[in-house]
Length: 319
Image (cartoon, rainbow, N blue to C red; front, top):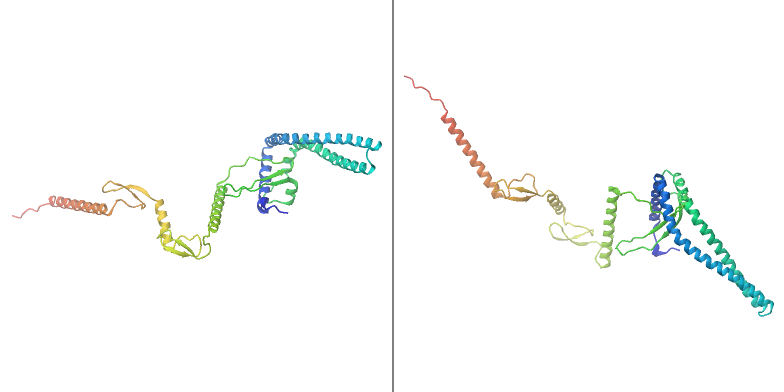
């Protein structure tokens, strides 16, 4: 029977198992001494409370077992002196003996578990040897599951943050539950996590809009992000009423990315622009600079002409 509250997909669970085996095995092989020390330290902390509880239960079962021996002995004495009838004696005796059988089994299992605690701490050295048997952790196979996996504990999901977060405890053979140091995420992994986060946000937004009764079937009434015109779209995330509006919008965004501060070559005023070749803050400054340069060119020509006339050689008159 499947518990819907603790449900997790097979694909996600297999990915978690493979990642746990891969990370733990890699760490155990590359840092064997440190790995063994960490596992033993964690095992001692985890087993201390478990051993304490187990010893308490074991002592309680042993006391009850001894009490039943005394009760059965008194029962025989009562039957011998005819204080109780045979039928009553048989009923009580069967019940006490069945309880003793159950207690005997529980005591044996408890003593075995206490011995396993010490043995598990010693078995940690077998895990690196098991990890070295595998050189490829790209795919989770049946032999890997059988050799590495001890048990899996799936907890109820937590939705308090808006995301469905579910804790899964994976216990490996010889070491139990071990949290290996995780390597720093690569830029590709960070980008993938950001993509998944955006996808979850879009999914939640769609669910919220559906729950609010918003129309999620075409046509959709939308407002153009460029011209502000209301239009009917065939997809819910449409932003523009026409390809021209889309082109203008993204051209404007690209131009905004190129925005810079410049100093006008005519009046010296600081202004902001998105063009790379602009020199003037306004058309008036551009025209004024053009007229000034034209006057300067004209003045230069007049000076040049005057110089040429003043240096022209004179011809002597004939006598």
